[in-house]
Amino acid sequence: MEDRVDVRLDDTAQINCMFSTEDGLGGTIIQWFYVTRTGEKQRIYYLESGLSYPEKGTPFSDRISVNGTGATEGVVLTINKVQLKDELEFICYVKSLTDGTAEGRTKLRVFRVQKGISIQEESMSKIGTCEVTNGYPKPNITWYKDNTPIVLFSTEVNVLPSITIESTGLYSVKSELAMKVVKEDADALFYCEVTYFAPGEETMMVETSPINITVYYPHTDIIMWVESPKGKIKEGDNVVIQCSGNGNNPYTTFSIKGGENLSADTSELVVENITRLDSGKYECFALDMESFEEISTNITVFVNYLEDVVIKPGKIMEVPQGDEREATCNALSSLPTQTAWFKEVVKGHTLALKDATFDTAGTYVCIVTAEEVEGLERSGTMRVYIEGVVPLDLNCYVQGYPYPTVTWSTSEGKVSHFLGETTDDGVISTASVKVTGDIIVFCNATNSLGEDSVTFNIKAKGSGVIIAVIIICILLLAILGSVLYFLYKKGKICGRSGKQDLSKGKAGKDNIVVEMKSDNTEEAVLLGVNGEKQLPSDQVWQTHVRALFRCHVY
Image 1 (cartoon, rainbow, N blue to C red):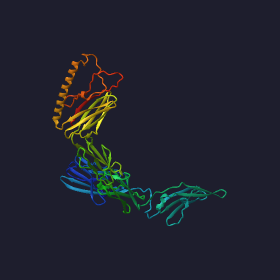
Image 2 (image 1 turned 30 degrees about the vertical axis):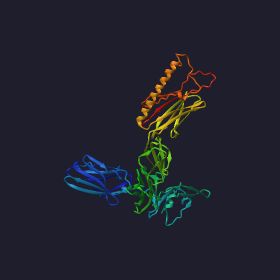
Image 3 (image 1 turned 60 degrees about the horizontal axis):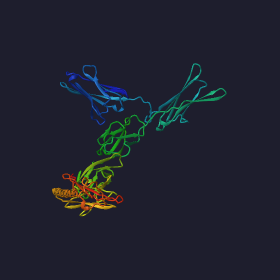
Image 4 (image 1 turned 135 degrees about the horizontal axis):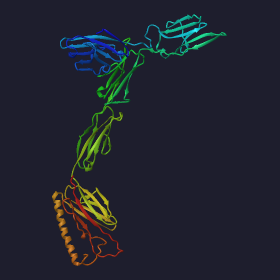
């Protein structure tokens, strides 16, 4: 291998590796390495029979390739778009099955044609040349910097004039300006002024267009910042950290390091899906490749977090009916948090369930948010079950006009929870009663013309209630049959004594028939009937009460 390969910046470099082996390329393993600035070897390419690939995650991964040289034994490493940081030592490592191992080294030198002027140069730098041809009498040239004449014969300035007398007797004058530049000259404008005499002792003047020079100067300070995201950082963000210097030096390389995260030879570091473990100090280093001086700065990055929600007493809570319970919802966070419960919208970490009913049961969702960081939130769920006696639903159907008002009461007091619905010819009222022992329930109906009621006698024992209802229904049916037979014999029924008026001012309670209905028994009807005649002018009021007894088991 060659000791040294020279290449211009941004050009393509080729490094040859020649070797001889009886195994040929098919029986040889070839690996390419480069030596880092810390002296470590880093592999960049692997080549074996039928297998070749560049190493991922190196500065050369997408810029190199390895091909045969055209000779029987030999390969060439090609590096595209050579950069200043590529000025390194490269190693070709060859391993043969029969000949063992060997390696060769080549240093890559990178050159760049200077387009600017460095203030670190000890000698004066050429600024520009001003030339006038074929004039007479001899013209004079004066150099200006920002509208101020440049003082000649200074230790920092040198103007080199040259005068040529053409064969025609005319003068050609050239003036070359050189000076030792400073940082402030980066913004300066230079131009030259030509003066010459005209007829009538008149002096003429011509100015050139101003020029600006590129001044290279080293970094004396660097700054570092988080480019993205703006504001506070949370776990899962893709974070971009950048640094920049106050100089203008193409020979400076930057690198950023923080924990296990590193950006080699670049002024930008991207940390994907950042976690709280990535919190800490991040440093930026700027190395001047000419003077090998290094400066650095650092920032502290803090990653906010919000852990999973913890619900106490747990994801399932059993609450006795009518009892009170509390549940808490919290999540460990680096920031203050806000908590909200949903099913019933409640704010705060604690959910208080008071006087629990079966409607209280269900799934509750709590959401914990850290409002200072957008999108930082966690959620959890809790299932609530209500323990208790299933209530009995009692239905009472009342006919009458004006529409009756229905109330419920028990032998222990009033029933506070019941619903009513008005139909075309009456009112349907439903009451839910909690049965913990034997109980009597009353359905009371009243309007401006009177009142009526029906009684539910409920036994706490399961099958006993059904048996009692069946016995009562049989007795009532027997009484109803006797009454109908008696009326038939007396001629009070239509078809035997003619058309009868079934309306009466008020239905007597003695004529009410009660029929109870459950999911497994018959239906019960309370019907007041009176066949006496009544004058058209008399007020008519009729009440028809039907009681339905249902037990809903959940």
